[in-house]
Length: 306
Image 1: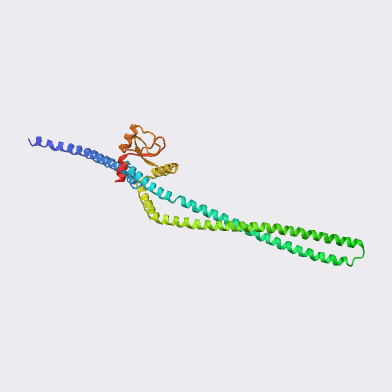
Image 2: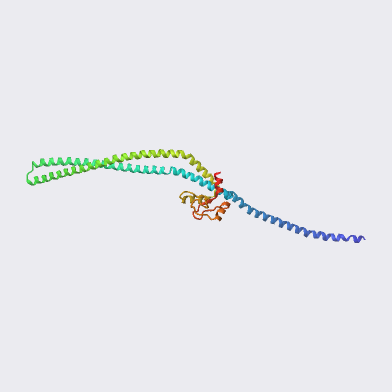
């Protein structure tokens, strides 16, 4: 009976041998699990990293379409008010510039006339000197005629005297012409100087008026421009570029318009009902298919005016 009880000792050895391969497979499986976890962690890092970067680099993309539309319509209202302020004083700067150009032209013309009068006065002086020289030569030739030795010398001196008399007549004629021209230039100078003074007075009045308007509207304009810059922070660069381009091409400077009576508020063309429904959903930015303006509904308008 003792021998029969020793048989379990032999069976215990195989049991220990069976445990070793089981432990190896467990280690292998554990090793595989750790590798899979490392791969999963690496993939998770690859996926998460761009997401964090996009959140940091593009914060404006997180703003809803409705808020973008509100910011666009608010920006349009502010820019329209700035346009009105500039229209009020818009004609005055042009008038001031025209007066400045006219004054510059008048001053140049007056200076040219003055230079011409100085040249005429110099010509008159030269002709008077030439006339005196001719008289002196005539007196000299007449004295020489008293001492000639033959008729040939006498005739030669006589021709010289006649020539000098012609020079005197020509000088007198030129002096009269220069004097007439000088009087005309002086009259024109007086006329343009009076006109120049009147234009200078008008320019001073216009400048004072422009300065007063600028002083009154400068603070309001600066506040509106500041408000405009604040609204631009909520709008993507792509939308701002499109907004600026539309405003530049539109005559009235309207890039964002309200739907009025089922039509575009910019070009007044009818908008299909499906487009109107899309506009009211505030899920995407809709533009007019005729004029390209950005369209908003009453909800956006009321949100801005509240």
